[in-house]
Image (cartoon, rainbow, N blue to C red; front, side, top):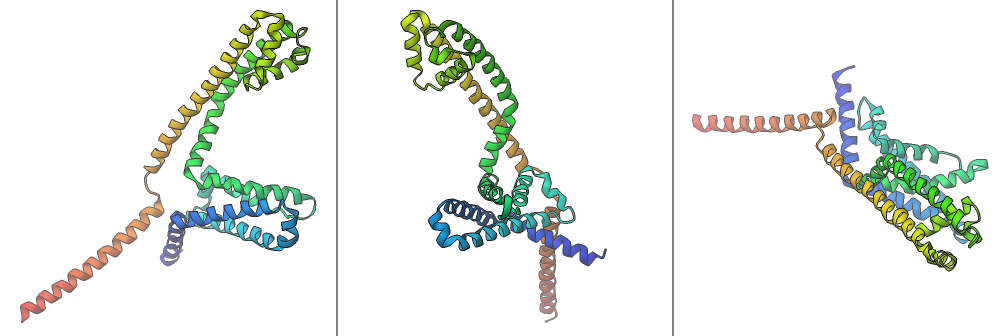
Length: 286
């Protein structure tokens, strides 16, 4: 491969990278996502579809074309290694939505195609770094949340069995079986009229408040705070990782771009020095 073709490829990759890193490029994509969200919302109205169905179809194709163009620009920006585009999980997410959007909107897959249009709105998450950080935090919090959920399940089971034996005769509506007792506990932990259930039990057992208060403290206050603590801890770690990513060494394309700009600046400086030197010689000759 000749040096000219290599230079041309590097130049194209550099231009695409510059375009992808331009704030205006990201703003245009965000605008397209919002336009898609508006179009999808309007498609739920029969009155709108009867009068503006064709323009909405054009908007859908325009949005899809802009997403494909965005992915192509980002792939080309990696130069001879376009597969590095998929090294970023968010790029994989965007590409998956684009691939699903190519499903034809007619025939047996028409409903699925409409649902995919709604999923395009999720691209707003990948468009904003802050939202990406929050989603990363939630995903990284899942393992710890599973352990907390397991502990919460054990507490629910213990209180559910105890509630059945204590109150199934007093209040069969809410405690007649273990599944119903667990559903009642879920209602209590969400504070949905749980005091009515407690007062019904207290009419037969005045000390029943101990059962309900202890469960509210354990199931609501303690567990919810544990969930919040895990999320906040992972959020801080995600912010630190983001700061570290911002300090990553430059890529090969960025280095080549800086070298090219430096060479251009040096060439201009050399021409200026040569021009100044020739002027000085002419003045000395005079």
